[in-house]
Every structure is written in C-alpha cells, then in structure tokens.
Image (tube, rainbow, N blue to C red):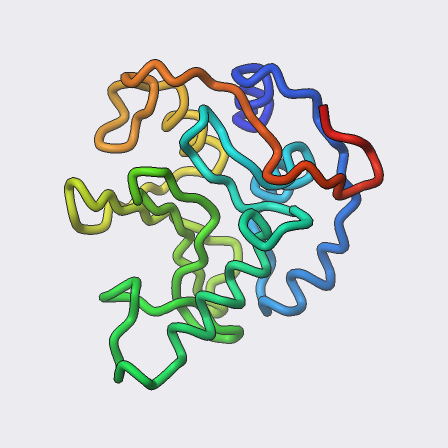
Length: 184
C-alpha cells in the first residue's frame, strides 16, 4: 500500500529491476524489509524531491545500497579512532549482529536507518536523526510509510519535507542505466 502511494506521489514509472536478493541478503546475513525491496526494484537509487537520497541500486557508488553499507561497516570497524562509531550509541550492522543499516539521507544531513538484529529477522524499526534537532527518533513503521510521510506530510516533525515545497519528483542517481534501459 505505501509503496503504491510513493509511486503515485512521485508519478514515477516503475523500473521493474531484476535483483538477486539471495546474494544481497546472503552478504548481509538477514532478509531486508519486503517493502524496501519493492522500492529498490521500482526506483533503483536516486533523489526524491531534490533533497532525499535513497539508497538502492545504482551504477555509481553514491546511491548503491550495498556499496554504502560496506563502506560504513569498514569505517565503523576501523580501530584508528578507537571504539567511536559514527552512529553512536549504536554501531553499523555486521552480519550476525545488531546495528544500523542506512537506506537514506537528506542534503540537510538527516539520516535514515533500520535497526537490524540478526536474532530478530523481520523486525525493521526505522531510526532517524536530524542534526538540527539531535538525537535518534524511532519509528515503528515500514520504510515506504516513513518515506511517504517525509515526502508528503509537512507535519511529520522533524523530517517532513513537504513544508519546504520541494516537490515530490524522483531522479535516478546516475545517468547510467542499471538494467540496460536508458534514463530519461
């Protein structure tokens, strides 16, 4: 239902990407939320409303979900800075553990994650933080509902973008096709 609302809101024509979910989820060690997988197949990676960066599938690393997760995990595990994590008081999710996996952000440095626990597959609360407000906010809703509310609900504090009247368009992350189809 919420994925359909995001599609209607943006006027986007679904890409219908073919994705090897077994390989992606095998690397992560957990299944991903079903609605996120649908968003990923419909949109790939790119930008909503000229401001919200959605990690999905993209030829460039900037919007590629797995590439960004691997980079975040490598940085989080790098002992050069001690036990400090960029997602304190959490850590970046590592296979078999518990931690955060980023799926989106904004140009204002808002960040959107799932809290994933390998011992509790199927539970994906959205954790978000706004550097303007500080601190983590937990949302027990689907990825697509959270995304829709950010884009369409001006009263969705502190993350609602509708109050800025930026539009609800979607632009693919790169000009390169991810499935052999040209981008318009």
